[in-house]
Length: 269
Ligand SMILES: Nc1ncnc2c1ncn2[C@@H]1O[C@H](COP(=O)(O)OP(=O)(O)OP(=O)(O)O)[C@@H](O)[C@H]1O
Ligand SMILES: [Mg+2]
Image (tube, rainbow, N blue to C red; front, side):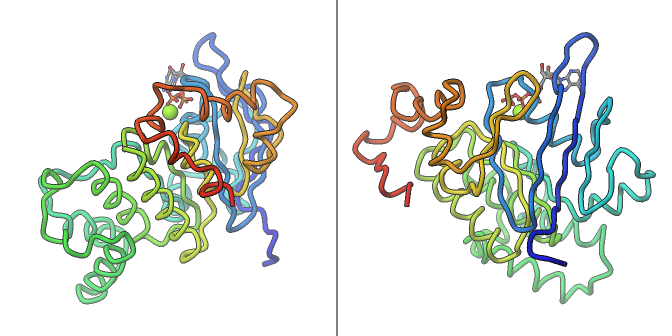
């Protein structure tokens, strides 16, 4: 496998619901180990794109290749097998409320692997350590803060050793400090487990911290990919507007934080 192996390859992906054309021509190649952030206004099809990749939504046409396989062509069994390689971190964290943290983490391993109880226990401890929550092992989800629940959601996805991670709004509803924590956690997981990721977010702190490349979804297609710094200076006014909001939107979560602490140097080096 060469270093520039394409892990996710979307070609001319189209999806409509009834008369509304949501995705008209989605094209994107992501190499192994890369993290691509998707920006876009609400309702433009960011989540639909992730669902096409994981096979929850079937596109009308186009290719959705993951690790060389075109997802819409897979049989049910092949898709189940492929899904074990794709981690999907849902916005809600989606923990089972009646199970402790330990049980939430054990559950996917017991269901999908033949690991011994001892090995499962080791993995649970390792991923909890990864997300900085070793002490929460016997807590119930209701006892956790929003940020902690997100971390457990991350741990539960990482524990399956996915090759691909899809993150849908991983920092929504979190304060700026927790947003930064979770974003750095995404980067750490990225480095440790060498996953290939798409992160859907409207949060520019998160986008800055996690992205290798960014694309902006508009009218069913992606803008030309670029780094944060490149797109911040894009000739396309619409693309630039996402970056301008960081400075201008006085109501944004960002600005609950002291304005002086939106220290560009800190995020942009
Ligand atoms: N299963 C579905 N059936 C019908 N319409 C759907 C379905 N899933 C999504 N849509 C529609 O497709 C459009 C795009 O939805 P999507 O959830 O991808 O938006 P989004 O870009 O993720 O927005 P947000 O930022 O608010 O999460 C919306 O108009 C939504 O109502
Ligand atoms: Mg969405």
